[in-house]
Length: 175
Ligand SMILES: [Zn+2]
Image (cartoon, rainbow, N blue to C red; front, side):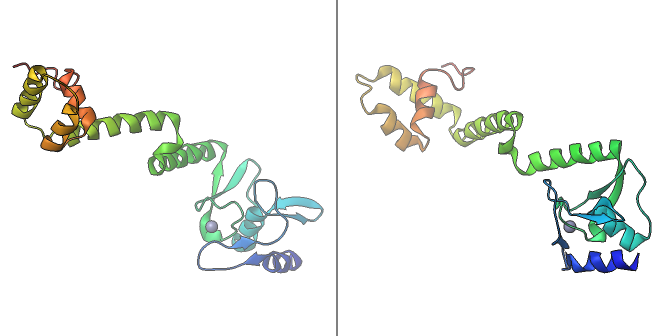
């Protein structure tokens, strides 16, 4: 087995972070090497080299760093099929929390959030402002350039003025 250990180190680039496997890799970027005529993945070999035993069948060597080609034993942990699935699910959740735009559902949620922010942004209008805007719009002889002028005057976007004028915002407010 000394051979195996020497072979492992000859295909591994160590660093402070992930240790990159420089040997043959599989499609999923995990390293692979033949051990006694049988292909073993590099993370499993790393486990053997550092901890002295092969993880049993059905037990996966998982990465805490999400880098499949990494063989740093500090980044490896053993999981069975179930915990592997749980790990994947929790990583997915984490990923979506960090990249909310990546998921359809998350993006729907994002839209809602943005819409709420918009409301928040226009909440600097006082109720009296809203009533005044409606009053001006209702009594204006011409609406030409009116929304733009009002948006400048009240410091909100034209769309907001339009929505207020049409009663889509602050529906509960009546004069
Ligand atoms: Zn790593």
